[in-house]
Image (cartoon, rainbow, N blue to C red; front, side):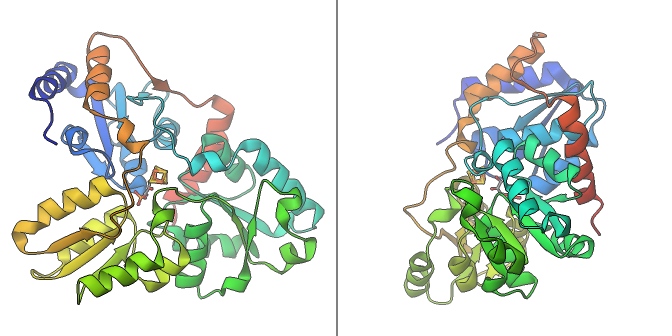
Length: 354
Ligand code: 13P
Ligand code: SF4
């Protein structure tokens, strides 16, 4: 739906008043009405890298979800203030691994006698606490665009990886990109004693996958892939690696949101695409590329928006920008110093990956 012209004007005016004092970052899953005000758009890797690109900006308004705003705070200087326009914009996947659960998991690995061999690799979609745990134990962060490089690095440091919190990205990367087998992977369930695994199973595994998933991408199914192939002959199926393994295995291409955009930019006129990722992005791409004769459809019509990404809407953005323009710092996301130090170590290992 088109954005309310009054709100558009208010956002524009507040942003103009703030000038260089504000830097607005927008994740690709954000609504059109919000993304139009982003100074930079990107996938989670690009946004982590770009967060520090404007050190003179006093305020960084992060249009995305909580863990992204935390990462921006960790990667920017202490006098830059990161603002999340709606504090309820969390991520259900990030919530699936808490600091207590992960500490307990480490005890289980220690008791099984393997903690020394294990390198934690945590997906960007995790809380600052989990990133700090990762940094403390010699591990790195990864995103969907560098997961293979992160795993290559981790297997140079140790024999096993504890992959948090997205089991699908972990499994898909291990099997699809690293040549491992499904049997090399076990799933650690934080709701079961010892993760639901025996010490023997832990010792035999190369990849210990945390039992977390994305509630949006987890809904794409093998049937969605089969159906779209039947409906649209010659269609290219392109999905995000947060999808289940059977979906990724049946797809033609797999990659992060930034990869998806690049693939469609490079696609020839007349080509047909079914995309398995968040709906705001897919709709925007369908509209953008339709005039070039590229047909882009959503992989499964029963899957909907990421509800927490969608919490950042134009009214929230206007409220945040107007508050800042009036000198009121609202909805600041600030990671405490000790957590920040270890989390930064893990994030910097990611940024240094070849
Ligand atoms: P990317 O932007 O890294 O592809 O990640 C998608 C996502 O789910 C972020 O929450
Ligand atoms: Fe989290 Fe999934 Fe939404 Fe991304 S799409 S923010 S992983 S719930």
